Amino acid sequence: MGLPAVLRQLSQVVVGKEQQVSLAVACLLARGHLLLEDLPGTGKTTLAEALARSHGLAFRRQSFTSDLLPGDLIGVNVLDPPSGSFRFRPGPLFAQVLLADEINRASPRTQSALLEAMASGVVSVDGVSHALPSPFFVMATQNGLDQSGTAPLPESQLDRFLMRLSLGFPHREAEARLLAGEALSLGDLLPQLNPAMLLALQQRSAAQPVSPALIGYVLDLLAWTRRPDTPGAPLSPRAGLGLLAASRAWSLLQGDEWVQPEHVQAVLPAVVEHRLDAGHGAVAGHGISRQLLEEVDAIR
Image (tube, rainbow, N blue to C red; front, side):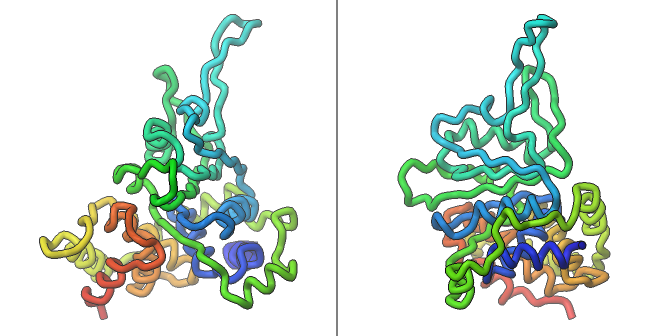
């Protein structure tokens, strides 16, 4: 039981993608939200459900179609005939892990309905606030912007996702295992953690020590993106906080006692690339973030 068992089990379901699986778990530990961008059939939905099952979390999947309304996602007040009063009927958003499938096929109005929930863990209906479950984790899948019927996510919405990942195609050996039926099915998964254990791990992650020198390194990374001649959009203080949170989670996954520069470097492309390119770049290339890591000296 524990994080090693979670990673081991997830890697038996999503084969050949150990790095992406570890980053997804780190995103959950850092209390972030995850955007998955890739071709259909590469395992995005499988990863989302496997992540929920391995942590013992309630899972819901919602397809973001063009006719989806905010009330379909959040829930509505309905009349209770016996009492003659209205009661709140929660929508699929009230899950510990929500898979927002093809989020950029929905209208901007429905996309923005996620914003309050992802930012604060509450939603408001008719002026009344309703707390979402804890933990609360959104995994959204996104089609390429060159596909028909898509509406690009605004930068404010993109910024609510701590990480953006692409699973890509498995390497030949892993795909051979998949075709031979050697991968675990979702029905074979057993909870390796429970919600209370996950919340405790999230608290441990947030408490991972960070030295002043490492904070200086993160500040140097942020400052590089804010120079007038730098390609891409500048990183905000919120991006810096997210980078530190993800680095703390990665250090916990690696079994280290404090955050080191290599932890920052491991998570940086997933954390900052969609902010630097405003969601329009090639997710597999990590071009700007690679240049960032090459040109900013790490602490010694």
